[in-house]
Length: 213
Image (cartoon, rainbow, N blue to C red; front, side):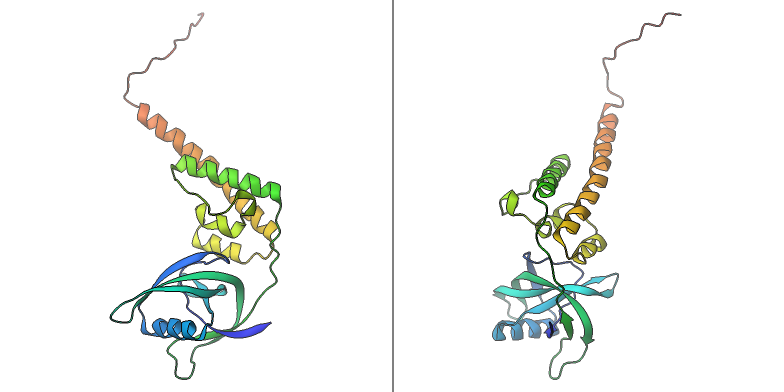
């Protein structure tokens, strides 16, 4: 299936099911949001990485316009719906300031491995404990998907985009597992280093060694 959608390129990765609050201030995007809201249409947020428009993005719906300012700027709440791939960018649309794209929607398998999910959630909670971060997910653990977890484990923008390019939940689970397997030992080493630095210069009660010479 292919169709035409207005696009709002941003330097973020939005995942299906994820909420994103935006402040709209550029004239072209004020027009885009106004058109989509009035016509009950969706728009696309393709990722921009290192000033380059990427092929993949997320179809996005407007949940609410929470505030309209005197100059026409807007605060809006949006929600990611599904991943698209850009086939062609349409830079000029008659009588519009914004651009659009012809896109297709890859099949996306969303059934993962429950046991891998359980271990992922446990690892993320351990990571947050080590970082002294308080964070709760708005779903029961067994209902969580990788899209719910990806922004909470310290992925780079490039890594978040790589995850968006995976269309099988089991592949996405393995991607997150590899990241956590790499990052948690690094954090643990940093914690040990911090403790050693704290001890430096302090009076310490150390056991002596009896050497039979």
